[in-house]
Amino acid sequence: MRRFPDGFLWGTATAAHQVEGANTSSDLWLMEMMKDSVFAEPSGDACDHYHRYPSDIALLKALGFGVYRFSIEWARIEPEEGFFSAAALDHYRRMIASCLAQGVVPMVTFHHFTAPLWFTRDGGWEDARSVGRFARYCERAGKALGDLVDYACTINEANVPIMVTMMREAVGVAGGGGKRVRALAEAARLSGGEAGRFAPYLSGDGHAATPNLIAAHRKAYGVLKPLAKGPVGMTVALNDFQADDGGEALRDMANKAINEQFLESLKGDDFVGVQTYTRVRFGKSGVLPVPDGAERTQMGYEFYPEALEATIRQAARVSGCPVIVTENGIGTEDDTRRIAYTRRALDGVLRALADGVDVRGYIHWSLLDNYEWLEGYRPKFGLVEVDRATQLRKPKPSAYWLGEVAKANQL
Image (cartoon, rainbow, N blue to C red; front, side, top):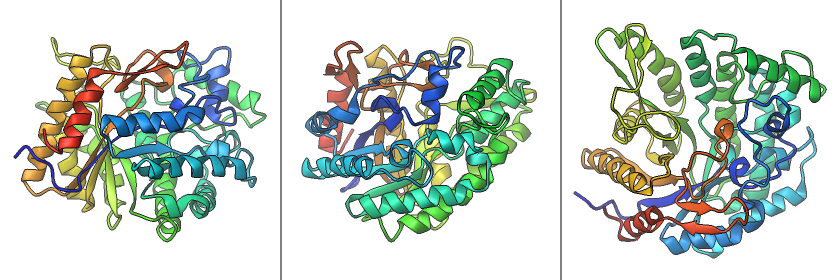
């Protein structure tokens, strides 16, 4: 079988902080701008998508995609606790309306890594009040936007904090390396917060954040379900965890803590978003290095598109939810490798579909070459190249290839 089911969703994705630019009220803006930042470079103007979204959405549609997954920025909507910006909400309403006007299905993520500075300064997701704070934001944004939202994702990769924390622990820096600890202390000082309370999503304590993130999704799901026009779910970062001889116990421990406790919490949701890039292999002493001679991506991990099929099957089995692949892609300067990676990943989607797994769409990461967090602008995940000086967009061969796959609905 090479054809996808009728109604299969084809799209591509971005995240607000990575493409909009000038997200000055967010926690990461402060951390990027610090003298001794842990970030390779600041996000700055990013791709200026905040102003250029109409032409970017038109480009996405022209290439052949029918879905745009993007995030709205909490830091813009609630830049100080309790103040909700009508102007920011109006901006995102125009953005969603632009999708609909161009025949593109909007898939809106309510939290994609960044948060308002006030939130992170006051304990972030490690503080139990985060649950109510996030639900309040979702309710206000849902009331302003929900009647236009075809698909809603509450939290992007809610398992990333525990994943990052456990990986730090695995290499013997349980409290974090010195530079990270100093950066958090300096961010707390600069923001006027208490030492030890500044807790950003990507570099805080995942053990403390996890129960609050799970509870926040559950509460946000309840808030958004009656407000959103369409299905509501959450996305999960799923590595294909594998074990060599002797590594089974460590693999199972990581799988339970990082993947399955989150998937189990989603039972009864409208869908689960699967976001997969590679595999992680365990030996008896811990995480194994990438095999000798194996191809690596710009992010340093193994070129292994077959991981997607395994995580789709796991997500469907454990959560019981329909699956949408909400992120899958590769950081590479060689666009032929992007096509090869995506073709092999889609082969896996087809195999899962042939076995009866309920997979409803494939959203490629990402639309644009954008800001890749700690790595800055070096890794190239985009189907569309962005000139850093002029902001000129130039679709790559992979954009045209995947767009044709989407239009034909077959590989």
